[in-house]
Image 1 (cartoon, rainbow, N blue to C red):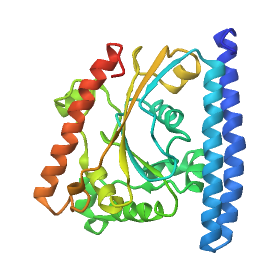
Image 2 (cartoon, rainbow, N blue to C red; image 1 turned 180 degrees about the vertical axis):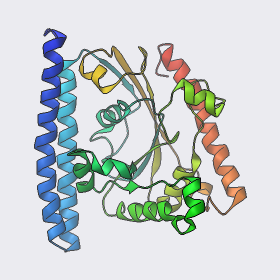
Image 3 (tube, helix red, strand yellow; image 1 turned 60 degrees about the vertical axis):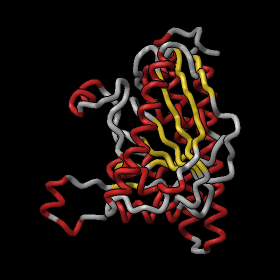
Image 4 (cartoon, one colour; image 1 turned 90 degrees about the horizontal axis):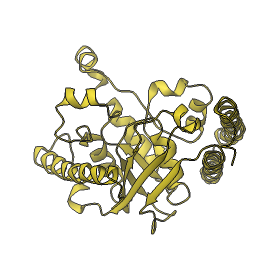
Length: 300
């Protein structure tokens, strides 16, 4: 434990160690990604994809060690028993901060198959990390505004096509497909703007979840529903590294996938869309109540 060091030493040290971890693992990832791209043999590429996942899981594990060394944050996690590394999961979570991502990774690393997120296309240009996400076959999605689609109707469906291609690629190796159902980070301002009926959440966006189930539903064995609470207030990544996060509470639930929600076409079937939205809203009602309970001091 290095928490005895004053913050003006510990925070720069934390940033340096995280940067070294990123640099070492990203370099190795890119080396294997280049090898994978250079050899157009399906079996070989699957083998290298597995190696890339092992490297990424080690990267996450080292981050966990750094959190333990440099912070006194208490991690209260419940519900991860029984999860399996071999299989396919759909992981759903509430979203408040960029800290949610390392929290999800630390909580689920090596307990479920490697987490893969749908990323905004702009993130491919993030130095180092953009290349690492590319090497790991993270799907980059380009969202179009209504105004853009009105001017360029030929772009309609492009994002769904990219999602379908990504989901087909996910069939090659066990994977946990991660989806922040709210679509954006929670803030009180967004909550008011949406007139959200939930105390702790934004309105869920069901379309992305529905499309993953439509494309991969028969492969996915269950849903891993994750609820994250920061009792001391929503932190930034700097807050986490500077040891300003007293406690992180995480509750994990494995839920069955309703069979009648797998084969419908969300965009074209109004009855199915209404049924799917009812299911997601019911899940969100439960999560909203659970967050209130967790903030009061219980993970149950």
